Amino acid sequence: MKNELERSFPSQEGINPEYIIDFLNACEKAETEIHGIMIARHGKVVFEAYNSPYAADIPHIMHSFTKILTNTAVALAYTDGLLELDDPILKYFPEYRKNANKYLSACTIRNMITMRNGQQRSIGGNEWRPLKSSWKDAYFQVPFDKKPGEVYMYSSGNSYILSYIVQKLEKKTCRELIWERIGKKIGLTEFSWMLSPEGVCSGGNGVSLTVEDMLRIGLLYLNKGKWKGEQLISRQWIDYAMGYLDPIPPENGLQYNFHWDHIDDIWAGRGMFGQICGQVPKLDMVFAMTAADEHYTAMRLFQTEIVDKVKADQETNWENASVKDEILTQKGLRMTLEGKNASVKEHIQLKEKDFVWMPEENCNGVKRVELHFEKDHVRYVMEDSRGCHEVVAGLEHWICGKTTMTCSYLHHQYEQDISRISAIAYWNSANALMMEWRFPEMAFFDHVNILFDGEQVRMNRWVNMNSQARSCPTLILK
View (cartoon, rainbow, N blue to C red):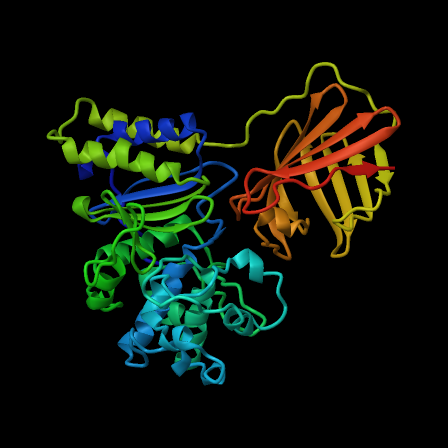
């Protein structure tokens, strides 16, 4: 049975509850969308909340926070005596020695972990996820043109190669290794991790974790790799990872260590679009968040609204502290992103309830679109090369379900066979039906607008944020 984390109230652990309320309000004002958050101090959870439809038990696809797990797997292989930080990577890939130049020949595991491998360009997960051939070969096809160890250049390709090395040495995937040696012991949920065509964990991204899983990993690192008296990760490795040993000079004020970057009082393991696990060693504090937050605004606000105030606070007995604890608790319970999207008062009354359209030729390969109006919901159907996909959206209310709906390039090239979805439909103008689709396992949510303009129907779809295209070309429906 999973060991529950101990719970407390902010005021009992030396945090004025008002600071957390101010932080949440500041995030709302900045239009930073928190999906889930947990805060712990002195090893006790003092706050936890989720903006519906996001929830505690729904794992969230991790982007670069995945690198913390990959580097932890490297730590286990290091502890097992199977590798050294200064091992050249070609020790594990002798097939590439023949054509290697002096830069590739000099590149070490340490260079890979610290993102100073000397390659010509970086490699992102969105580049490789659609790739069906060898990711390892794709990595070594990118030239090495700089002396390793000198130039910081962030690349998920490095983490894939580290994952590959661990699997060769430990004879099991990083997921299997982490689950057996750490995950079960610290109480992680049994997580999934995307595999490459070669059957290797993707390394830089693609694991799915809950917010609590992230928090537990942060607590393990804050406690120097020890959990309930057992040293699961060597303390020396933790010191390397945090930059206490062999610190690397900062880049633009940010010190990047073994994927724990350091700025102000926070050491953060981060992932694109706003996932953060932050340690504040000075305050014995850990926090974890998933969000739709492209610029990590929430992390900066956590520093100014909570960390700075706790550091400066000389009081621990605040007036009406228990009342404020309860106000914060209630605020957390009421958090939701499922707004009451109401239709405009006057909109067209369609003569038909069922529509089947054949779109003009389009780059997305959409072959057919259907829209069916039921008593209290609409059923949207789309056919493309992947098959037939359906979303059920409540008319002026939210419906939670599952879908196979496609469009990976809007979602940083992530495409699950089946995704959770929460959807609503409403008339946002006299002749336009709007649907909002939230995917609570991801940072992304889409809007789909169907415009009835006389004899012509046009459909547009766009996403809240992305690393590449944020919208699909307009579909002309006939």
